[in-house]
Length: 316
Image 1 (spheres, rainbow, N blue to C red):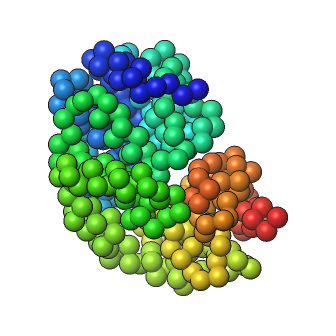
Image 2: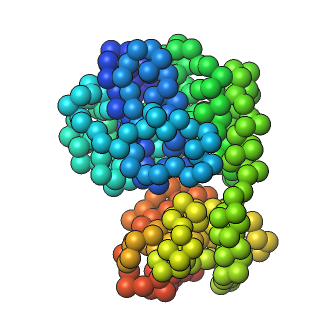
Protein backbone atom coordinates (compact mmCIF):
# COMPACT_ATOMS: atom_id res chain seq x y z
CA UNK A 1 0.00 0.00 0.00
CA UNK A 2 2.94 2.34 0.61
CA UNK A 3 4.00 4.71 -2.14
CA UNK A 4 7.48 6.15 -2.25
CA UNK A 5 7.96 9.72 -1.08
CA UNK A 6 8.93 10.82 -4.60
CA UNK A 7 5.36 10.25 -5.81
CA UNK A 8 4.01 12.20 -2.84
CA UNK A 9 6.45 15.05 -3.44
CA UNK A 10 5.44 15.25 -7.10
CA UNK A 11 1.75 15.41 -6.15
CA UNK A 12 2.31 18.15 -3.55
CA UNK A 13 4.39 20.28 -5.90
CA UNK A 14 1.66 20.12 -8.54
CA UNK A 15 -1.13 21.19 -6.14
CA UNK A 16 -2.18 24.81 -5.68
CA UNK A 17 -4.73 24.55 -2.86
CA UNK A 18 -4.14 21.96 -0.12
CA UNK A 19 -6.53 20.97 2.67
CA UNK A 20 -4.91 19.22 5.64
CA UNK A 21 -6.74 17.07 8.20
CA UNK A 22 -5.87 15.22 11.38
CA UNK A 23 -7.70 13.21 14.03
CA UNK A 24 -10.41 14.42 16.38
CA UNK A 25 -9.17 15.75 19.74
CA UNK A 26 -5.71 16.35 18.23
CA UNK A 27 -2.63 15.91 20.39
CA UNK A 28 0.71 17.68 19.97
CA UNK A 29 1.94 15.29 17.27
CA UNK A 30 -1.24 15.65 15.22
CA UNK A 31 -1.22 19.45 15.38
CA UNK A 32 2.52 19.71 14.78
CA UNK A 33 2.44 17.40 11.76
CA UNK A 34 -0.53 19.18 10.19
CA UNK A 35 0.46 22.77 10.92
CA UNK A 36 4.08 22.37 9.82
CA UNK A 37 2.75 21.32 6.41
CA UNK A 38 0.26 24.19 6.31
CA UNK A 39 2.93 26.70 7.33
CA UNK A 40 5.34 25.56 4.62
CA UNK A 41 2.67 25.32 1.92
CA UNK A 42 1.47 28.86 2.54
CA UNK A 43 5.01 30.20 2.38
CA UNK A 44 5.34 28.52 -1.03
CA UNK A 45 2.28 30.37 -2.29
CA UNK A 46 -0.19 27.52 -1.93
CA UNK A 47 -3.50 28.13 -0.18
CA UNK A 48 -3.61 25.76 2.80
CA UNK A 49 -5.43 25.27 6.10
CA UNK A 50 -5.72 22.63 8.78
CA UNK A 51 -9.40 21.76 9.14
CA UNK A 52 -10.42 20.91 12.68
CA UNK A 53 -13.46 21.59 14.86
CA UNK A 54 -11.66 21.00 18.16
CA UNK A 55 -10.63 23.84 20.44
CA UNK A 56 -6.93 24.11 21.30
CA UNK A 57 -5.87 23.73 24.92
CA UNK A 58 -4.16 26.67 26.65
CA UNK A 59 -0.72 25.10 26.17
CA UNK A 60 -1.44 24.29 22.53
CA UNK A 61 -2.47 27.91 21.90
CA UNK A 62 0.95 28.98 23.19
CA UNK A 63 2.65 26.92 20.47
CA UNK A 64 0.36 26.83 17.43
CA UNK A 65 -1.01 29.55 15.15
CA UNK A 66 -4.77 29.10 15.32
CA UNK A 67 -5.19 31.43 12.32
CA UNK A 68 -4.03 28.49 10.20
CA UNK A 69 -6.94 26.37 11.48
CA UNK A 70 -10.40 26.48 9.93
CA UNK A 71 -13.51 24.52 10.88
CA UNK A 72 -15.54 24.57 7.65
CA UNK A 73 -14.02 22.99 4.55
CA UNK A 74 -15.45 23.61 1.09
CA UNK A 75 -13.89 20.59 -0.61
CA UNK A 76 -14.49 22.05 -4.06
CA UNK A 77 -11.94 24.81 -3.37
CA UNK A 78 -9.02 22.38 -2.97
CA UNK A 79 -7.12 20.17 -5.39
CA UNK A 80 -5.21 18.07 -2.84
CA UNK A 81 -6.24 16.60 0.53
CA UNK A 82 -3.72 15.36 3.09
CA UNK A 83 -4.46 13.36 6.24
CA UNK A 84 -1.82 13.13 8.98
CA UNK A 85 -1.68 10.89 12.05
CA UNK A 86 -5.05 9.23 11.27
CA UNK A 87 -5.46 5.44 10.86
CA UNK A 88 -9.25 5.25 10.40
CA UNK A 89 -11.97 7.19 8.60
CA UNK A 90 -13.89 7.57 11.87
CA UNK A 91 -10.94 9.40 13.45
CA UNK A 92 -11.30 12.13 10.82
CA UNK A 93 -14.59 13.05 12.46
CA UNK A 94 -17.01 15.12 10.39
CA UNK A 95 -14.53 15.35 7.50
CA UNK A 96 -14.14 11.59 6.99
CA UNK A 97 -17.02 10.97 4.58
CA UNK A 98 -15.97 13.78 2.24
CA UNK A 99 -12.25 12.97 2.45
CA UNK A 100 -12.65 9.41 1.18
CA UNK A 101 -14.78 10.62 -1.75
CA UNK A 102 -11.87 12.63 -3.17
CA UNK A 103 -9.63 11.29 -5.94
CA UNK A 104 -6.53 13.27 -4.91
CA UNK A 105 -5.63 12.28 -1.34
CA UNK A 106 -2.45 11.59 0.60
CA UNK A 107 -2.33 9.67 3.89
CA UNK A 108 0.73 10.17 6.13
CA UNK A 109 0.72 8.13 9.33
CA UNK A 110 2.74 6.11 11.82
CA UNK A 111 -0.10 3.93 13.11
CA UNK A 112 -0.90 0.51 11.75
CA UNK A 113 -3.48 1.43 9.13
CA UNK A 114 -7.04 0.35 9.90
CA UNK A 115 -8.95 1.43 6.83
CA UNK A 116 -8.01 4.99 5.86
CA UNK A 117 -6.45 4.71 2.41
CA UNK A 118 -5.51 7.59 0.13
CA UNK A 119 -4.63 7.67 -3.55
CA UNK A 120 -1.05 7.98 -2.21
CA UNK A 121 0.07 6.65 1.18
CA UNK A 122 3.17 6.74 3.35
CA UNK A 123 2.73 4.77 6.55
CA UNK A 124 5.70 3.89 8.76
CA UNK A 125 4.78 2.18 12.03
CA UNK A 126 8.43 2.25 13.13
CA UNK A 127 8.38 6.05 13.37
CA UNK A 128 7.79 7.18 16.92
CA UNK A 129 5.79 10.20 15.71
CA UNK A 130 3.99 11.38 12.59
CA UNK A 131 6.12 14.53 12.80
CA UNK A 132 9.13 12.43 11.75
CA UNK A 133 7.29 11.33 8.60
CA UNK A 134 6.27 14.90 7.76
CA UNK A 135 9.90 15.95 8.34
CA UNK A 136 11.01 13.37 5.73
CA UNK A 137 8.43 14.66 3.26
CA UNK A 138 9.47 18.31 3.74
CA UNK A 139 13.15 17.42 3.29
CA UNK A 140 12.29 15.51 0.11
CA UNK A 141 10.33 18.52 -1.15
CA UNK A 142 13.49 20.58 -0.60
CA UNK A 143 11.36 23.37 0.83
CA UNK A 144 13.14 25.55 3.37
CA UNK A 145 12.51 24.39 6.92
CA UNK A 146 12.61 27.51 9.08
CA UNK A 147 13.30 27.52 12.81
CA UNK A 148 9.55 28.01 13.41
CA UNK A 149 8.68 24.89 11.40
CA UNK A 150 11.51 22.96 13.08
CA UNK A 151 10.02 23.95 16.44
CA UNK A 152 6.60 22.66 15.37
CA UNK A 153 8.06 19.33 14.26
CA UNK A 154 10.06 18.98 17.47
CA UNK A 155 6.84 19.58 19.43
CA UNK A 156 5.23 16.59 17.72
CA UNK A 157 8.27 14.37 18.19
CA UNK A 158 8.58 15.26 21.87
CA UNK A 159 4.83 14.92 22.39
CA UNK A 160 4.44 11.40 21.03
CA UNK A 161 7.57 10.12 22.78
CA UNK A 162 6.62 11.86 26.05
CA UNK A 163 9.91 13.74 25.96
CA UNK A 164 11.76 10.61 24.76
CA UNK A 165 10.84 8.24 27.60
CA UNK A 166 8.19 6.08 25.85
CA UNK A 167 9.02 2.61 24.57
CA UNK A 168 8.41 3.74 20.97
CA UNK A 169 11.64 5.79 21.03
CA UNK A 170 14.34 4.53 18.68
CA UNK A 171 17.58 5.68 17.07
CA UNK A 172 15.71 7.58 14.36
CA UNK A 173 13.84 9.59 17.03
CA UNK A 174 17.09 11.02 18.36
CA UNK A 175 18.49 11.59 14.87
CA UNK A 176 15.40 13.61 13.94
CA UNK A 177 15.62 15.60 17.18
CA UNK A 178 19.28 16.44 16.47
CA UNK A 179 18.49 17.57 12.91
CA UNK A 180 15.62 19.75 14.12
CA UNK A 181 17.80 21.35 16.77
CA UNK A 182 20.40 22.16 14.10
CA UNK A 183 17.62 23.80 12.08
CA UNK A 184 16.85 26.07 15.03
CA UNK A 185 14.03 24.28 16.87
CA UNK A 186 13.25 26.15 20.09
CA UNK A 187 13.30 23.14 22.42
CA UNK A 188 13.16 25.34 25.53
CA UNK A 189 9.82 26.77 24.36
CA UNK A 190 8.42 23.29 23.73
CA UNK A 191 9.68 21.91 27.04
CA UNK A 192 8.20 24.90 28.85
CA UNK A 193 4.69 24.65 27.42
CA UNK A 194 4.38 20.89 26.95
CA UNK A 195 6.15 19.55 30.01
CA UNK A 196 6.79 22.29 32.57
CA UNK A 197 3.69 24.49 32.48
CA UNK A 198 0.54 23.88 34.54
CA UNK A 199 -2.51 26.11 34.91
CA UNK A 200 -4.66 26.18 38.06
CA UNK A 201 -7.29 24.20 36.16
CA UNK A 202 -4.73 21.52 35.24
CA UNK A 203 -3.70 21.22 38.90
CA UNK A 204 -7.37 20.61 39.81
CA UNK A 205 -7.53 17.76 37.29
CA UNK A 206 -4.24 16.33 38.55
CA UNK A 207 -5.70 16.32 42.08
CA UNK A 208 -8.82 14.54 40.80
CA UNK A 209 -6.65 11.87 39.19
CA UNK A 210 -4.72 10.97 42.32
CA UNK A 211 -7.82 11.19 44.52
CA UNK A 212 -9.62 8.72 42.25
CA UNK A 213 -6.98 6.22 41.10
CA UNK A 214 -7.95 2.53 41.25
CA UNK A 215 -5.71 -0.51 40.87
CA UNK A 216 -6.78 -4.04 39.87
CA UNK A 217 -3.87 -6.50 39.78
CA UNK A 218 -1.30 -4.83 37.47
CA UNK A 219 -3.72 -2.32 35.96
CA UNK A 220 -4.33 1.26 37.18
CA UNK A 221 -7.27 3.34 36.01
CA UNK A 222 -9.27 6.51 36.60
CA UNK A 223 -12.86 7.29 35.62
CA UNK A 224 -14.53 10.67 35.17
CA UNK A 225 -18.20 10.82 34.21
CA UNK A 226 -20.07 13.53 32.34
CA UNK A 227 -21.58 15.17 35.43
CA UNK A 228 -18.24 15.40 37.23
CA UNK A 229 -16.45 16.67 34.11
CA UNK A 230 -18.97 19.45 33.61
CA UNK A 231 -19.00 20.39 37.30
CA UNK A 232 -15.23 20.94 36.99
CA UNK A 233 -15.84 23.02 33.80
CA UNK A 234 -13.59 20.64 31.90
CA UNK A 235 -13.39 18.67 28.67
CA UNK A 236 -11.70 15.51 27.45
CA UNK A 237 -8.52 17.49 26.73
CA UNK A 238 -8.16 18.26 30.43
CA UNK A 239 -7.92 14.54 31.27
CA UNK A 240 -5.96 13.18 28.32
CA UNK A 241 -2.80 12.81 30.40
CA UNK A 242 -4.38 10.46 32.99
CA UNK A 243 -3.30 7.14 31.48
CA UNK A 244 0.21 8.49 30.82
CA UNK A 245 0.63 9.40 34.49
CA UNK A 246 -0.86 6.16 35.81
CA UNK A 247 1.52 3.93 33.84
CA UNK A 248 4.39 5.46 35.83
CA UNK A 249 3.21 3.65 38.97
CA UNK A 250 5.58 0.89 40.05
CA UNK A 251 4.06 -2.57 39.64
CA UNK A 252 1.57 -1.33 37.03
CA UNK A 253 1.89 -2.69 33.49
CA UNK A 254 -1.40 -1.39 32.07
CA UNK A 255 -3.22 1.89 32.65
CA UNK A 256 -6.34 3.47 31.25
CA UNK A 257 -8.70 6.36 31.75
CA UNK A 258 -12.35 6.58 30.77
CA UNK A 259 -13.81 10.00 30.10
CA UNK A 260 -17.51 10.53 29.46
CA UNK A 261 -17.19 13.72 27.42
CA UNK A 262 -20.68 13.25 25.97
CA UNK A 263 -23.51 11.46 27.73
CA UNK A 264 -23.29 7.74 27.07
CA UNK A 265 -20.11 8.06 24.95
CA UNK A 266 -16.88 7.01 26.64
CA UNK A 267 -13.38 7.90 25.45
CA UNK A 268 -10.79 5.35 26.53
CA UNK A 269 -7.06 6.09 26.66
CA UNK A 270 -4.70 3.14 27.23
CA UNK A 271 -0.99 2.90 28.06
CA UNK A 272 1.35 0.00 28.80
CA UNK A 273 4.91 -0.68 29.81
CA UNK A 274 7.40 -2.41 27.52
CA UNK A 275 6.40 -6.01 26.82
CA UNK A 276 2.66 -5.37 27.17
CA UNK A 277 0.32 -4.56 24.27
CA UNK A 278 -2.61 -2.13 24.60
CA UNK A 279 -3.15 -1.92 20.85
CA UNK A 280 -4.77 -5.37 21.03
CA UNK A 281 -7.01 -4.13 23.84
CA UNK A 282 -8.05 -1.06 21.82
CA UNK A 283 -8.75 -3.14 18.71
CA UNK A 284 -11.21 -5.32 20.65
CA UNK A 285 -13.02 -2.06 21.44
CA UNK A 286 -12.95 -1.01 17.76
CA UNK A 287 -10.13 1.43 18.44
CA UNK A 288 -6.44 1.37 17.61
CA UNK A 289 -3.04 2.90 18.17
CA UNK A 290 0.39 1.62 19.16
CA UNK A 291 1.62 -1.24 21.34
CA UNK A 292 2.34 1.15 24.22
CA UNK A 293 -0.34 3.81 23.58
CA UNK A 294 -3.81 3.30 22.15
CA UNK A 295 -7.39 4.45 22.45
CA UNK A 296 -11.01 3.80 21.63
CA UNK A 297 -14.47 5.28 21.96
CA UNK A 298 -17.41 3.14 23.02
CA UNK A 299 -21.09 3.43 23.94
CA UNK A 300 -22.23 2.01 27.27
CA UNK A 301 -25.09 2.31 29.74
CA UNK A 302 -22.85 4.00 32.29
CA UNK A 303 -19.17 4.48 33.10
CA UNK A 304 -19.04 1.37 35.30
CA UNK A 305 -20.20 -0.79 32.40
CA UNK A 306 -17.53 0.80 30.20
CA UNK A 307 -14.89 0.14 32.87
CA UNK A 308 -15.90 -3.52 33.19
CA UNK A 309 -15.52 -4.01 29.42
CA UNK A 310 -11.97 -2.64 29.45
CA UNK A 311 -10.83 -4.53 32.54
CA UNK A 312 -12.23 -7.84 31.31
CA UNK A 313 -10.23 -7.51 28.08
CA UNK A 314 -7.01 -6.57 29.89
CA UNK A 315 -7.30 -9.39 32.42
CA UNK A 316 -7.85 -11.93 29.64
